[in-house]
Image (cartoon, rainbow, N blue to C red; front, side):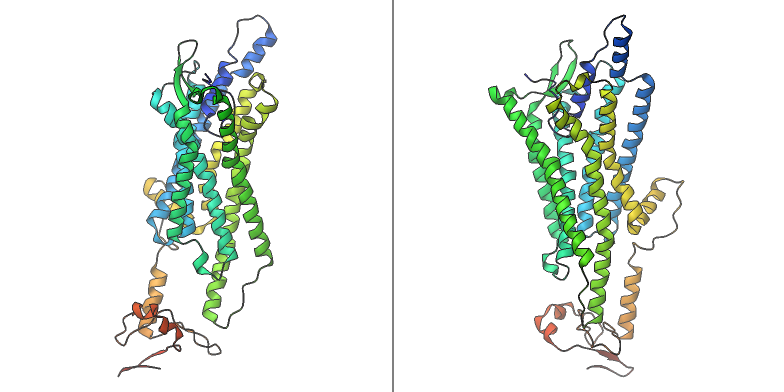
Length: 434
């Protein structure tokens, strides 16, 4: 039986049992030796430190939930933000929200509030919690990978729209990340068990005896797979894609075109991509930095120092690494707020609805009034894709019939794109096509 386990199965699947184990294996002993009493004091958080940790985790949990809920609301509510990249960002917000709900509260509840380390949430929650925690981290990591791949394709294939990730393809990728995350976390659903410890207290830990004598070997293989697929591979992909993007954008130029309107469209898209890339690079870098201390503490140090639980100040070190990892779920909404004006406007809009103390005047960037008014002016003035006098008129992607109604079916016709450019001339008597 491997009930209670050791340190190192995945980044989040054993956070609660590991922290509990550190405290249970270092229970205070009755002794008159001041040095021993001092060491026992180190292993257990003082009441003031407990209150500080409770305050920190409570604020962290509220901020994580609030920020990621705002991200979800803004993307779902405003049509202008329902792009392929933002669909992936929406999936990342859902993953961070799962971490905020299932990882932060349960990870500090029993080790900070209950000194006897008992598990209070029942047998079903014992198995389900480890599964949800591991799944949420897989989902977050691989969504970052998909976002980096999306940005890489947008830069590498700027002039090839058919190769880019569309909204439909983004939904397929979101479904794939969920399936992969569920499959990778599924073993924890069957190996995490509810049991009673030596003192008869209910507890929760991993039990790999389901695999018989090879259970310990299976556990090590699974732990290695989780470490590689949850952190190493995603970070490697992020480094490769964003390095390639940086080199490409540093040396790239927007290709010149005879068509002024098309050239402007490509330049605008190139500039928007250039603004978005630093934001997703920052998100990926913070993911690496926030999770690295906990990764080392769980998976690396125990391999070289098996007696890590007997270290002085180990509990302080543990809570620092754990708090830093959990804070990653809060930084993403902050980055969106700082780096993206449309997200910032959406955050202010919904915050004014949820919090009466926040005032918000009007939406500017998230409405379609500008584009609608332009289309209306174009319709009544009879202008289609206006160009300067020294440029050739561009082939329009839309066409007006004689009644002034947009003929979309004609736009889809292949013969339309092969025809010479059309210019609409309107007068009071009749309409003529030249």
